[in-house]
Length: 113
Image 1 (cartoon, rainbow, N blue to C red):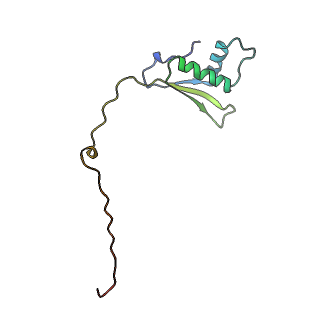
Image 2 (cartoon, rainbow, N blue to C red):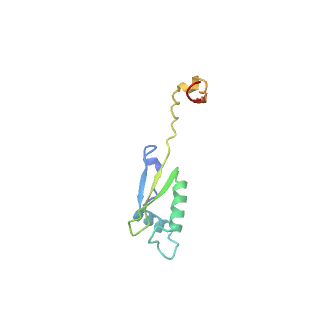
């Protein structure tokens, strides 16, 4: 099992790594550890985040499920598109001067004025 890389996906396509895959990757790559990880704790989370960044993922977000027995149920990773963004459409506010606010006060002086 190799660490997932964004080269196999289209840009802007997320990749979900479930809890079991995260633990299998950690236990495989960190064989020197005396005890295998059984939960996605701080150490596993930090290692996975660092590896994802090294592999070229732009975004790494751990997904939680408060109803599950385990806090982290997986991780979503994504690579941003490198294609240029289309130009923003011109708006009418760019061509017209800013609007002015005029305050008008009307006083009622009563009958007979």
